[in-house]
Amino acid sequence: MADNLYSVPKFEDTLFPLKKTLQSKGNLYLMEEPWVMGILNITPDSFYKKSRISPKNSEIIEKAGEMLGNGAKILDIGGYSTRPGASALSVKEELNRVIPVITIIREVFPHALLSIDTFRHQVAEIAIQSGADIVNDISGGELDPKMIRKVGELGAPYICMHMRGNPQNMQELTHYDNLEKELLNYFSEKQKACREAGIKDVILDVGFGFAKNLEQNYKLLKNLSLFSQLGMPVLVGISRKSMIYKLLGTDSDEALNGTTAAHTIALVHGASILRVHDVKAAKEAIDIYKKVYA
Figure 1: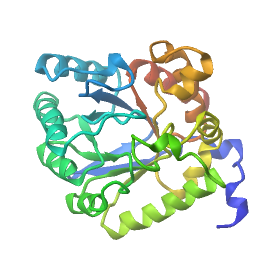
Figure 2: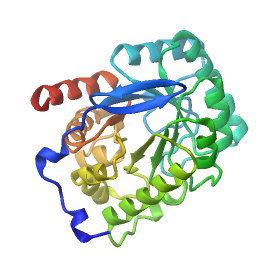
Figure 3: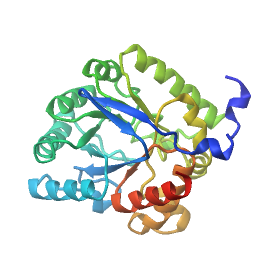
Figure 4: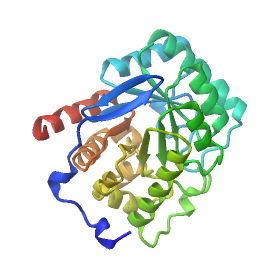
């Protein structure tokens, strides 16, 4: 790819391009503005303690309803913690965590868009069959070579993230000769593989915090608009992450203000979806962004 592809676009070219669409299970969704994806962690060890939800139906319904009421367009359900150094989990245990949650949310909120946060094709398949709409894969098929083909068979939209290694060793794999160029090439190749597998809708996620150090995370945030040239919606997952609280000398509990600031920067640089713990704050950032730039 030519070097001039890696120059920063003009400011006016970074604004959210309207009228993107997403198809799932025969439904067409119009993305006329950035969306909020609310995080539902069915894990005992996710990095932000307040995001952990017990498998009790009442708590799940309450949290899902709150997020949808505050403006979430997607609920992202995950049963495998992917924080740095997280413990491995069996497929069976992951399924035991997420499938009952998907089932109850689909029953109570039949029109909600649900994504399954997994890198395993077996979990993705059963989750989609149980009511999920989207597959959110932190590994872009690298941890399970059957994933992309399976998502194509399922006819589901696919969120393809960049990561090196796995959650246990990814922070040892942060050397890049040219970070943006390597990620652009990665997503170009993944986009082709997804199309060949029959996946119609691909959303890219640069993978903030996954095999990237603090400086690399902020470099990607600054140059996020580069990835819009690939023609795919861009999902940003930076909510309460260490790139925010380590910079500010706080912790995940105190990282909401920093998260909102970073979300605003991401929106200006072309983010299509914000994956967040705090739906209300993210939706307010989008509303202010729209008032200025719409």
